Figure (spheres, rainbow, N blue to C red):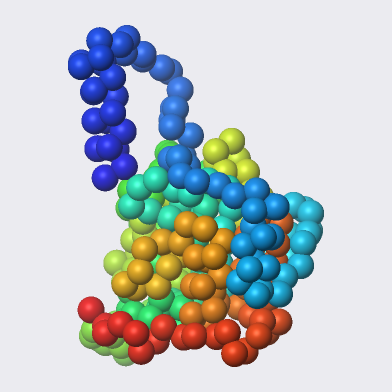
Length: 275
């Protein structure tokens, strides 16, 4: 979808408008696909006040520290920063992020945040320089399009009685030390995160790594099943109040669910039937 649209635009530029076709040696001239709208802190604050939200404003450094600490504590975080992604994947601009080491996180995010079946898998976002230490993979994957296996030294031993399990019971058995992103066949769809294309997302994962030794976060799109990914601060706040996310980070603003007016909570759990 993303590549097709950009390719069509380049084709029209070169073939139909007779413009020069430039060949570049850069790895990724699109710089991560963050081509959508962005919002200034002033614009975010106006929208949050209009929504009736309760929030705190922090510096970049304090916001990153706060979010990393929340991840370590097992919190599910709505993360909206910078320009929106253009394409089929959440790439750390409109994402829900969490600790991949938690054996319960996959089920929690699916049932309480995304409102979908508990077995649905999640993808890892990992610092690019650490990818080969955690996966059988050693190159770039900035658009979360490539699958690789978790390295064997990160697997956990599965007992004989667990190996005989089938279906949903087998899915409940942790297969690695990052079970929230590891499928039953030890695979994962990887996003490598690069400091030059998404410095804030990179920084929060880097801070999480310093606290835990793990350079990975769970990354899933900031929406619930049945709705599009959020775009504006109002979208993000509505989604935040419609599921059981613990914390929302928009620009330099932090919102805690416990601080919000309880009358504004409107859970989506009964709004859509399961697929």
